[in-house]
Length: 78
Image (cartoon, rainbow, N blue to C red; front, side):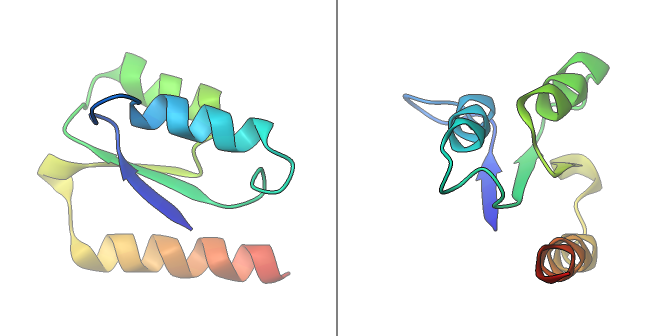
C-alpha cells in the first residue's frame, strides 16, 4: 500500500499514483492519497489517476485510515 500526500516537492501525489498505475509491477498496489485538498475537482483528479482512496486531512481519523488499509489489502488477497 502506498500512502502519500498530494503536496510534495518535485512530484505531487497525483503524479506518483499516475506513474505507479503505468508501471506493470506496481499498477495493482493500492494507493491512498492523504491531503488537505478537499475540493471536488481534487477528489475527482485522485480517482482519475487511479487512487484507491482519498482522505482529507481535516476529516482524518487514524481508525479510518487503518480500516481503509485493511480493506484494500484484503481485497488484493482475494
